[in-house]
Image 1: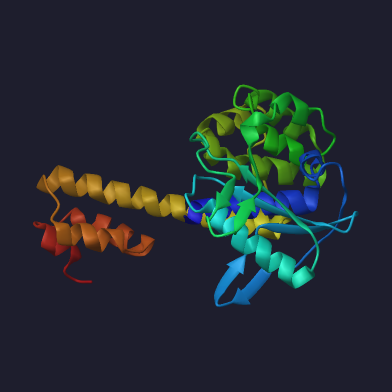
Image 2 (image 1 turned 180 degrees about the vertical axis):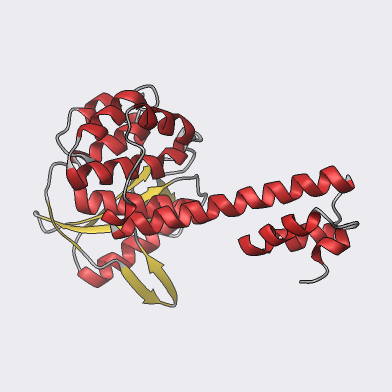
Length: 276
């Protein structure tokens, strides 16, 4: 869930800052006048991804989804009502699916009691990557990687991103790195970037992308430490008791790292964890 939250933050920043052509395509050609406050606190805390006031005085609500969610229609209905209640304007909703699994969510809901919900549900793979690559907006390059044929065009996308100058180059390369996990091509992308000498990026250039990058790296380091400890325990003691599994699943990175070091001299699994 933390991983998908990180992807959401990158996509929200991309659409708000870079104004890719895809945004205007999804709004039906109506330009965004301004992005609105999207936090609500009524009974439960809710935070929509993007809410924009359009030039025709309607509101466009935009959600990013990295995995299939059975209750997406209920979620859209709640958001739509809360946004409409707050701003008193017509609300049009689009959910952009960017996950790797086939999209399997309904785009409407009929409760059978007179309440209905309808929103536009779009898999980004319905959009050809070549169309996005024709855009002059740098942000469209990152979206092209997720679109139809984007994986096959990865080398060209990385090359064009590397040719950008200044902060635009840093932004797009960072977006590509962070979003490549949605297509499980992080390693392939790094190879492409390394071959072009584009791997050195100063993530401090953008506060949001820097924070997301640090979160993703922290999660990656934690998962690596967990896998190393588990493998070492199995290799030395053949099996891992349930209580040890519980301890490892709840452990911090520092604890996992400390247990890995202690395991070298430990004569039992209990000795690995007993000093905590």
